[in-house]
Length: 412
Image (cartoon, rainbow, N blue to C red; front, top):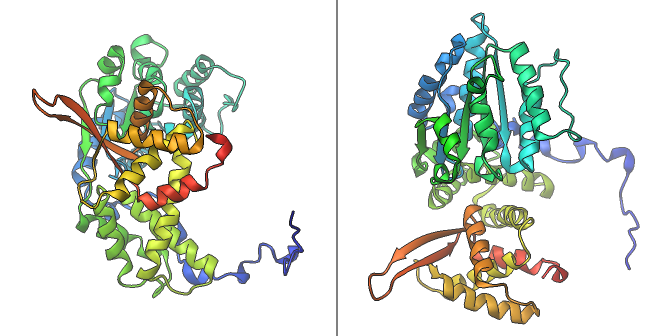
């Protein structure tokens, strides 16, 4: 047992910002927040998508009904940014007309369940003057919906709701209820939904009635290329004080992000981690040499967050794929399901854990692909080989092994 003598700890100066160099590093820290919506002239590579989405939802400005929209694309391709920008523009346009537009944004990945997602929508829509409340607990999904109808019918001429990471919902019933509110008579004003998914096949999973109410308005956002990523990151340079960010930092991060499927979110997030690292270590500059270590720390934290809610055996399957990846000297590091399971069983034996059934293992692999920890593809090998699946790791295998080694052994 160890004791903490306190060292130089002084509670009187605990929050004294003069004791760190945060102000020397940052000019506007908000710019490296991945939730920040930049000004219109700083939105890169999405002008066409913005215009197309605006054309769909523009009738709401006059209180007229319009279609709902499905937006697909990999993580970090600007889907959420464009939806938030459109909602901001609708609010600005509505202020110039006798129209009250209600806007709401909910991320289903952090809402922790269908009921909480519906509750968050209601809380976002309810204006300060509303007498309708949305307590965090104690109400059913249906009761939250009843309160949403009261809010929209009392305060708005039209409503637009963005449902981000919609594939994280257990079912699509909220989409059906919201998109058919006018048809069923519970809402007196038009409600349009922007549903965002990282999965291109999400529509195939939707209830037929929900598909019908959404119509066929679907947009696919392609990954950013290296030039676009660099421009996006250059717009975030003003987050830092002049001369803090080394000249080679943004080009290097842009190149890394382009290699990782054009994920702008990861690039911006890495800038954030670099800034925090400089503050914590007392550096006055951010250099290219810092990137690898900080990137590994950021990936480890994200990976640990992603797998924290998964079955314990998910860690064994991930580390099995990491071991295969490290052992393969080639560049095309795809591995058949059977090879992963063979290595997984070795780790189970090493940890004294009973292997899961084949079906449960496959379900976990599907979950890992859904979370973009791995990527999967189906191969058609012809008459003699048949159809089989292959998987590859989306994280550095050293990062996976680090997270695995930090796992509490009692969880396995």
